[in-house]
Image (cartoon, rainbow, N blue to C red; front, side, top):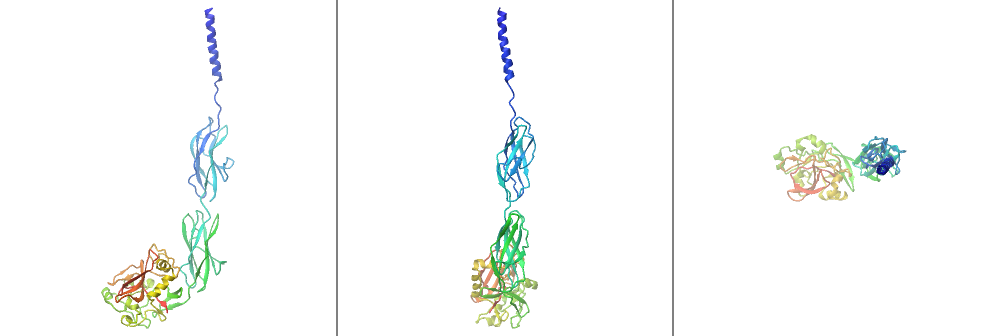
Length: 433
């Protein structure tokens, strides 16, 4: 009887173990789990994103990548990449975008259960309509001008032109020398135009066109100069320019004679230059070719127009052509005041660019005066500063030994009212009587 009773507990334990094992089933597969990577390396037409598959859902990943659209929460029905079947991080290169586009990206992963998407992220491709600004025209002559402006292409190839004419209806177009403009920096643009009428006001503006649109700079005007030229007694012909109420030579004086034909002594020896108390001239570094570009250098005695001293200085003669004269200190001040004052007038008087001025010369020459840096000759006779500095005599003496000049440097826009010893050699500009 005891053996019979022992069998039942054993049977019960076996049955419990059987049914317990039979009820423990494997969990079913699920969709993958993943996140979307931030959008990076954005250009006008491409970008980089990707994702991180943190779980395959206990089923093999069949495809993964990112999908994108111009609307939120894109799906695999939209544009997409295919980037493999492994779990973990993946990188997706997005191509075929358009400039200036706002787009949305989601990572996706698919297994046998279905497709899961990461969080929606957004960005915009580079590229916008261009930015354009019209700048003053310079230099200006009787029949032509250089039209100026700045353009930022905003990453898209941008065609740049200038519209110009007698009214704001314009009517004529000139292509910018720098067109097309690319990149994302402010670019200086210009166009040379000819065939204009002297002493006439013209309107112009810069126009910039890229694939996203067209922009215009504001309307700017300029007036062409007089067609008048003047010749000195040597036969050198000078362009002239009207600035306010004054008519100036637009070039530095080159004559070797007073206007009655009397020769001005050309002193090359340093000691003789230092000792001279009468009118004299020199070529910079005693090289005549420099005078072709920059004009000659004259001591103050050659330009003296003071009643009490000029007979001694230059025999009472005039270094400028008939009908013209060396400007007084007051007449120089009239010029700089008209151009906004000494602090800014230099930028409007100096020739633009770095052909003759050292860099950084940011002058506009909007006056048409076209000042060039002829350098100087010191009281000891040594030469210096060609290309960097320009000095111009006035006829006004400040004392028995010194006279006023106007001085300009390559790196700023000032016109300095300075005074130097009379034996110094400086450039000369003549003013019409």
